[in-house]
Structures are given as structure tokens and as C-alpha cells.
Amino acid sequence: MINRVSVWLNENEMGTVVRSEPLTGGSINRASRLVLDRGPALVLKENDGMPEDFFTAEAAGLAALQQTGSVRTPEVVHVESDYILLEDLGQSSKSESFWQELGTALATLHSNQQAKFGFPLDNYCGATRQVNTLSSDGYTFFAEYRLMTLARQADDAGLLDRALTRRIESLCSRLDQLIPAQPAALLHGDLWSGNIHCCETGQAAVIDPAAYYGWPEAELAMTQLFGQFDGAFYEAYQATAKIEPDWSDRADLYNLYHLLNHLLMFGGSYLAPINETIKRYAN
Image (cartoon, rainbow, N blue to C red):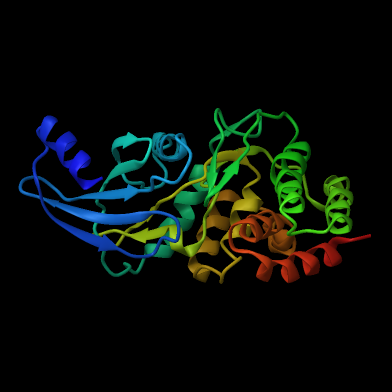
């Protein structure tokens, strides 16, 4: 892989790789920092075991976020079916305003809205294909293309029993009673702490998107799934977006999507929290 990347860099007069430094943090792709003999370093993410559109979908998500001018993302330098080459944002300790600026930036991102939920193409949340078929109804979109698509996959894989799948389907029929109407806003789509990056400047950036137009509350819910972000983040978001103050009461319901995704990717340890969530919101 590095040989092919080196050839592309030389052909495009971007320099020669003098050193490759492995990067940690991801669980799906191999990542490394490429130090060049001239110009800034680059980040290489590679995986020859994923579908051909895996990295092109990531590039499309990064482009969509970047076009809003709201959140910092790495520039895409080059993408092929088995790798993506990105701007190296560097790394440092968080500035005092890190979380506040991120909260404001995310609220600004969510101000980019459209009539339909979804995205022009399917992409990936982790290693799982994320279906983004456009829909004019947010409840239908979340029920069919978030919860039920993954529930059926888990059922087929023997990870969910049929009774539990039916309970998820029943829950989907009541979403309009549990979730307030919200616009279709541009989301990062996989916003947990591992996808927040502190740049060399001490400022925040977001990486590894699973971008689509969806409910803003669902994005905020994801920030709480594996431990909450700093309080300054939520305060800044609230000040800019004026979101419903009780949004976190619904976080577990939104996060059922990500729990189902983790069940598919990592196995049965996620079955217990799925059961608990369904019990909480059952009739």
C-alpha cells in the first residue's frame, strides 16, 4: 500500500515519504502519519477488506461537512477504493475554549437543513453500511433506515431473537409519540469522543463522519453514549441552537441505533443495553 501511495505522491509532485509513523485510536482501519521530504505530513488510512465505496463515502461526508464552514475537518488529498489520504491536523492539548467552540460549531452545522432526511449516497457508520435513502418523513426514516435495517441484519445473523426484533418494530410504530418533530439537519453521524480531534492549534476538529441529514437530538445523544462531553460543549450548543431542554431524556432511544450497530460489529455484549432500552420505552 505505502508503495502505491508513494508513487501517487511522486507523480503529483507532493514529495517522497521519508518516514511512516503508526497512529492509534481506530478499530477498523490502519492509520499512519506520512512524513514527506518536503511539505506537510499527511495521514493515510487504509483497509483492503472493506467495500469499494468505503473511503469514497467518507470523503463525501467530509466534503459535505466542510462545505458548511462550521466544523473543522481534515482536507481530503486523495482517495481510492482501499485508502484515503488526508491532511494531517497535528495534535496538541485542548485550548480553554475547546469544548465551547465545538458546541457552537456543531450547532452551526445543524443549522444546515433540507426538506428530506438521508444523504445522496449510502455510507458507513463504523464498518456497517448506513442506508441513507431520502425520505420526507423523519419518523419513517429513523424507523426503517436506522432501527429496523440493523435489527433485521442482527436477526438474520442470530444476534437478536425474533421476539426482540418484533418489539423493536412495535417501538418504531410509536416514534411519533416519543420524539418531537425536528428538521432534517446535517449531522456528523458518529459523534463520539473518539471522533473528536484536538489539532496542533489546540482547536477542535471532527473526523470519521457518517454524515447524513437527520434529527439534531440524535447527534447529541451519541455524544453521551460512551461518556458525556464536557459541560461547556452542551451549554454552547444550547445557547446557539435553542434545542429542547429535555432532549437528553430521549438519548437512549436515539442511541438504540448505535447499540444495534455495535451488536453487529462487536457481538453479544451489547444485547443487554438493547433490552434495557426497549423495556424503558415499551408500552
